[in-house]
Structures are given as C-alpha cells and as structure tokens.
Length: 235
Image (cartoon, rainbow, N blue to C red; front, side, top):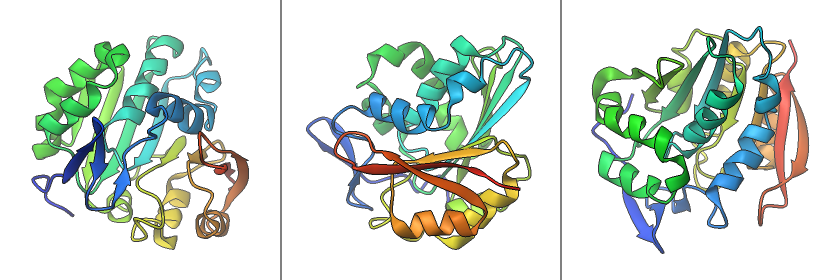
C-alpha cells in the first residue's frame, strides 16, 4: 500500500483543487455540494433508508476520499436523519491523500458545512499518519481511511457494505482503479440490500459491475454529465 506521506499534488485553479497526477477536478465546478447530494446521497437513497427507527449501523464504502466532501455531506444528513443510537461506518480508500493544509483550503469553499468540517480537520493528521480509523461527532460516526490502491485496500476489508460511493477520477483519467478486480471486491462485501452510485456512465464500468453481480441502471447525470449509473447488488 501507498505510504501515507505520499500526499496529493494539488494545483489551484480559480480557487478550486485540481489533481495534477490525474489531470482532473476533485468535484464539479458547477456546484460540488449539489453534485454529491444528487449523485451519491440521492443515488443511494440514503435519507430515506436512514429514517428507519430500527437502524443500528450503516456502512458506506468509497473509492477516493479526495477533499472529504462526500463524507461530510453524508455525515451532515446522517446526523439529522438517523436514530441517535445508530452508528455510521464510513470506509474510504485514497491513494494520494491531501495534506492537511490543502484539505483545509479546499473545505474553506463550504462554510455551510463548518460544524462537521472542524472535527475532521482536528484529527486529520492522525488519520493519514497511522491512526487509520477515528471516531467523530459524539461517536456517531466511525471514519476509516485506507491509504493505497482501492482494490488492494478493500481486499483487506471484512465488514459488509450497505452503500458504495464509486468516486475517484474519471475512468479515462484513472483507468488503474476502474478494474474487474475492484468490482469483484465490491461484490464480496455486498449483500442483498447494498446499493451503489457513481458519476460515470462509462460502458466498461457498467459491464464490469453487471459481471460482478450488480443490477445497473442509467440515470440523468449532474450538471454537464449526460448520464450516471446507480444500482444494487443481487445475491
């Protein structure tokens, strides 16, 4: 696995982070918050699923932690909709984590999330330098950040996943991640109620997920993207 010290090489373009390694943006230049809500939160029907009064635990797995925006948006809804005694386990794989300084600069774009941002920033250095797992928000959220290649990281995970955020950079920019082996690991960790959502509608991704046992559907994409993919695992 990649060393945690191998942080992302960030360029700043019009005040927004850009990944030099992949020549791609971290989130939509139209509106990153709305993109996360539409693609990942709505795509996985999270708010509705979290209203269940019997819910005790819920696990999200993500490819590409990036700026943490998906995590923070998910947490924001989790804290307001889930039962008080329920715990969210958020597992994210990231090959090139941002430095604390770059993360802070990126998240300054979202002052409306300040109450969930500050606890993350306070523990972020520990997270990328050996802690791997931290508890946040009165222990209602467990964040596990796995440093390295997504497939290799998830091959070591044993806990079941309820929802997948297939993020990371576009398949054309980051082909090493979007591989059959990743979809096979997703299937291994999924169950009959597991869903997924991703911003891409690339044919190779759609076929790979279907071959691994997922029902795959196209949905209107966010912003300039014509289509995206959502679906669920079939045991």
